[in-house]
Length: 366
Image 1 (spheres, rainbow, N blue to C red):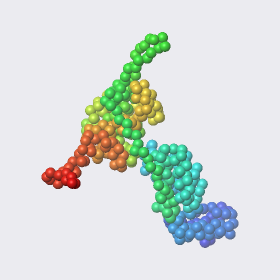
Image 2 (spheres, rainbow, N blue to C red):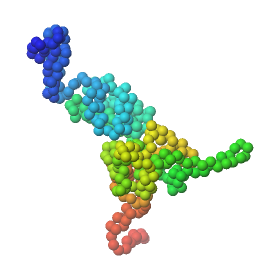
Image 3 (cartoon, helix red, strand yellow):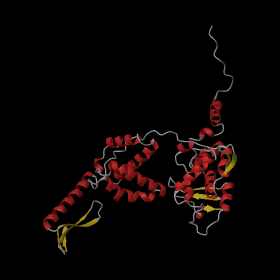
Image 4 (cartoon, rainbow, N blue to C red):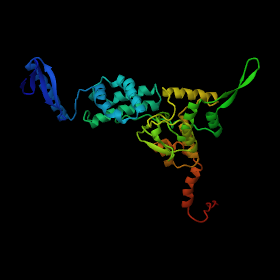
């Protein structure tokens, strides 16, 4: 093997041998002639030197390559499985078509704002904000890792979102949902008969578990027997949306439900019967809700119902946050208006601070 100043010959070809800005050694096949290989080596060293001077690594890298080779391998493992899939879909279907082929350093704030405005015309603000957040995060990591001096998305403001849907059930509606209801069917000839609508055993288990824990659909689907402690009467939800495990006490109905299920000796086995696709659970619930007269109710509304029930019973905001796994108090404060006498209790502070004695009305003018 012949070697000269940063290039060497192997099997008839000239290769370059260099260290990048991070000190990592590289050997790359360059050219069949020494002269061309030397030019390749010089260009490579100039690019490295330029990056050291400007403080920008791989200055010409395109956004798609940065995401696929640098960003996604680093962040995907930190995301919960469901959100990992959703985030990758956002990148592939919404962000790459707009910015994938652009050089990372060529992406500008005005281009991002135009893209975001176009997305707001087609999707809800909450959806567009999620897409913008993923783009912001990717560009923010590019800054931290030295691929950009500043993020062009840093000053792009998210759209204002509505307070969100807060749906809760009455006791009678919960009973219909869990135990079913009768429906009278009339034929064109005047005959009538009663039809009973009840959830099947699998769907009923999910409904009860959701109402008694406030857990998300994905959390219930991932619940394993290793996460259930029947002695301590606790349930632990893992790989949650916010990335933190949470353990909550079992209610009596939840304890009874788990006690009625056949427990597997495999701690990784699912507690609730598995649906091949989470959407199948959603569709089954939607059909059942419509049949018992609760059309428009979604499975996620059961989580809202749990939060509303806790708040209406006087449970403190901090406890509700811990039970539901909220990290942002704004997610929980939406239910505060349901707390018994919360405004009256707040106004007592003003009452107690008022001066003692009788407050006289101002004298009438002559």
